Length: 225
Image 1 (cartoon, rainbow, N blue to C red):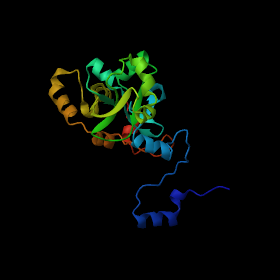
Image 2: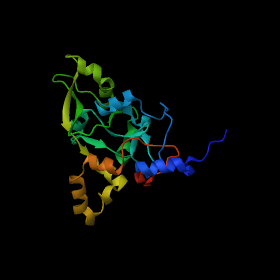
Image 3: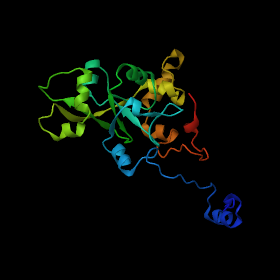
Image 4: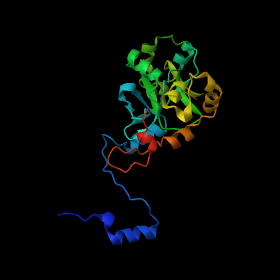
């Protein structure tokens, strides 16, 4: 049986006009291999989930995704920032720092989330706990829920403000940000200072992403590097 072309079906088009629906609708069959389940969305929106970088989807525009949702991610190990004397940073793109981490620390896990907040959870060594190497710390970080549940666990949960990674903004040329050109230093610093995740995800819509034949209305989906 051959179905009619409903885009040319007068009764439907008349109804669409009465409804004020200018755009054609779209339907995509749910596939748990490529679409987030309800539980996965809830996990990403609350505490987040731990993933290695080889489990992250890198989109053509270099933003980061889990299945059909853009995400942000960060290293949740507070001891890492302390030992490297760095301010905690989150990533929104496949930047040079993530590339280096993939090459040198393939087993490192990052906390992946879709939550837009002022503060994010970090794992902190409890007073008196032995300082360990980055690779040894990952053993505690791999099961944070279990660590938090125990009062004798070697790590505790702390909330900390994070800043966006400069390399991510440079990779995306976000609002023409360039961290290497001296003549744009003042402008790029303003972009950095005024950066807000809410603005970022308006430019790069978070959810849902479509990888089928949906008419492209998300310019950021197809934006090349």
